[in-house]
Image: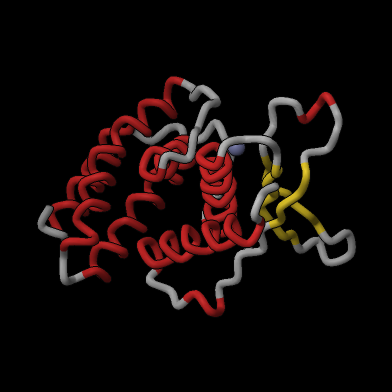
Length: 190
Ligand SMILES: [Zn+2]
């Protein structure tokens, strides 16, 4: 028997951490609408452990997102990985253009938080991912050690926005983004 309360607590802790590191936002106005469900008894869900639901209001056209995690006979570690995976989709879906499985932006956060990205990237996206990851890791590792957290948060945000931008503007050269990443690390002294 799974303990939903425990997993919900784990999900909330991870959500708080993401919001602190990347936004420095108080989390009381930042509710995580995660849904835990029993995995449907249907072949099409056999290899799916969760998904991020997009709902569009047909009248207002406003869209909303929420992560869904299937509770199955998975191990505790696998379930926690699925929770992180879906929350990363959700977080990026709220703030950025690229949040899907095959985006460099998704791979970047999955790399930092062991979110289990598994869909292969295109050559360009892989290049963006590989270029960004050493810098974002340096900044992220610096976050807990340094006093000036707001500066690290701002520059982490700049890097994520630049990755999003690199994926949107296919004509832009990746080396230009590398300069931005270098600048961000330099600014934070790491
Ligand atoms: Zn996914």
